[in-house]
Image (cartoon, rainbow, N blue to C red; front, side, top):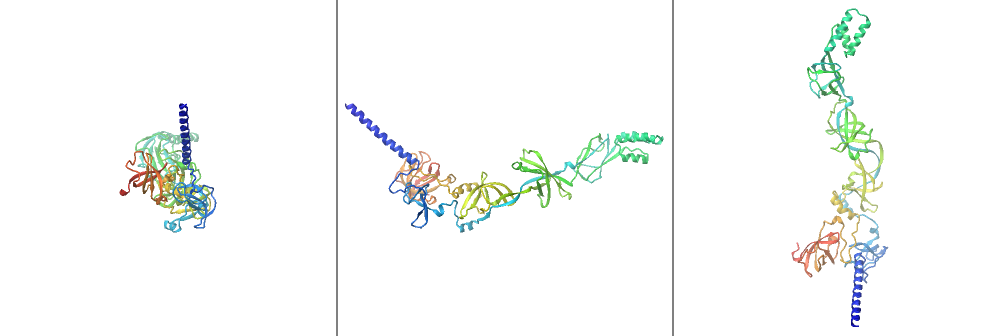
Length: 516
C-alpha cells in the first residue's frame, strides 16, 4: 500500500513538472516570435487608423516603438518591449516615403534639380581609332621580264614619291634579239605580214609599245626600261637593290597613297552588338580637336582582339589636305543614322556603384527618395534611362548628399528608403539591430550591471542619443563566453557595443571610473 502511494506521488510530481515545462516552452516561443505579453499598461496592437494627437492636434496613423517599428498600436502607452513611451506616426508624414531635407540644408549642400526629359537622340558612343594606309588604293611596281636592276632611283622604304617619279631602271638582255630581228626584216624589205608578226613577238616579250615605236623611228635596239610611280604617295615596300636580278611578276616596290586613309575604330566588346556598317563616324586628332574628319563605317572586321577585347570597324576618311599620316591616334564619335526617342537625365545625376545605378528622385511632396535605375548609353551630357523613371520626374542633379562612393551609398541609402530594423526578441528585451550597412559603427554609454551570463550581460544604461534610445534595461551579447571575466553584478561600467546579426554585441566593458 505504501509503495502505491509513493508511485502516485512521484507520478504527480512528474506531471506537474511537465506542465510547468510546457508552459515555459510556450512562453519562450511567444517571446521568440516577438509577440508581446499582454499587460495592463501595454498598448494593444491593432490595424492602423487615424487618431488625433492631443498635444499637436494632428492626425495619427498609429503609435509604435522606434526600436520595433514594425509593430503598430492604436493608442498611446508604454512599450511592451522597452521602458519607454510609444511614439506617434502622423498621417502627413507616415504616408510618404523618402526623406525630408530642410531647405536651408539643401542650399548649404548645393542641391540642384533637373527634370527627366524624353528627346530624340542618336545611338552614339565614343571610341578610339588609328589611321592606316588605304590598302585598297595601293599601287605595286612589278617587273614583267627577267632582267637586272641597272639603276635604283628609290633609296629606302617610307620615302615620299610624286606621281610619275622613276623607281628603277632595268637592263633586259632578252629584248635585244627580237629587236635586231625586226630591224633586219624591215631593212630586207619583207612584206607587212612578217613585220606585223615580228611586232607581235616583241609585245609578247613585254617590250613596251613606246619602245617599239622608238625602234621604228630611230632604228636602234634598246635594252633598258624605266619603271615609274603611277600615283603620289609613300614607298611602303622596296624589295630590291642595285644590280639585283628580277624575274617576271616580282614586286619591286609598293606605293600607298595619302589622299585617302583608313580609320580603324576600336569598338569595346560590350558595344559589339550595337555597331553596324553605315554608322556615321566623326573623328578628331587627339593633338588638335579643331579639325574634324568624317566618314561611314564600311565594314566590321571579324574577331575580337584577345589583348584589348575590342572589335575593329573600318572606314575611309578624306585626307586631301595631307594633314594626317598613318599611325595617328583619333577620337571617334560613332552615331546611328536615325535618332531614337530616349528618356534622358543629366549624367551627373546618376550614382553608379558598380553593381547598380541610383538616382535621387524628388517626390511631389518634396521628399527625396533613392530609385534604382537601369541606364543605357550617354548622349552628350545626358544618360539614357531604360527603366526606373518616368518623364517629368525631378531628380537631384548635384549635391546628392555628398554620396560619391560605394561605401557612403550603402550606409546612407537604406536610411533614405526608410528601411525598418527587424523586430527585437522579447526574451532579451533588446531593440532590433541596425541595418547591415551600419554594422561597422559603434555606440557607447554607461550603466549598471544587472545580470551576467556566459552569452550576454544585462545593463540598466543611460540614454544613447545616436540611436534615439532613452534610459532602459536591455541585454547585450558577448563576443565569446570568456569575454569580460571581471564584470560583476551591481558594478557601474562604461561599455561600447555594435549592431550584429543577433542584436547588439559588446566590444568593450570597463569600470565607469576608467572610461575614456
